[in-house]
Length: 74
Image (cartoon, rainbow, N blue to C red; front, side):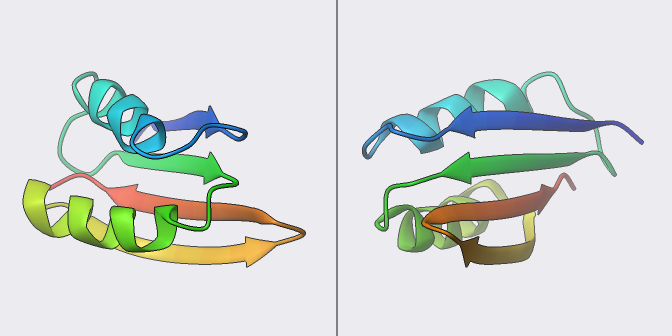
């Protein structure tokens, strides 16, 4: 399984989601995508993004103003 990281720190909505969508194209089922963002709106955006794409938002959290999302590809 591969893990890819998208660094979307400093970007505002909708750019973190768009970068994640682009990165998902290179991944296959079982792979994970880590997204790092600083936009507080990304929390709701990635919950909706996971539902819309059918992938699992397996982890999310915030530390020092950086939001981390871990998406598992289905």
